[in-house]
Image (cartoon, rainbow, N blue to C red; front, side, top):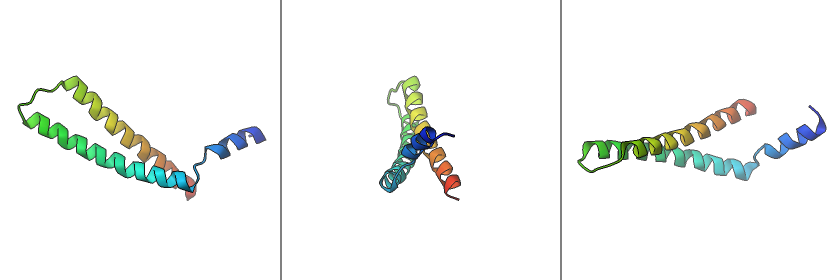
Length: 81
């Protein structure tokens, strides 16, 4: 790796303030995932009309965000060990 590549990587490592923000996002994403699961259950149990494709897309999006942040955090733990 040359100096330019090392410099680019150094700029990509979050600082302490960014880590705190990422930690908050992780908590919010987990809560959003749980809220979405509850909302899906409530919609399916009720008689209110909903678009199944839209609901599935929303659920997948919330799940994907939570998983991506979790993977990022796991990589963080591996690199800090």
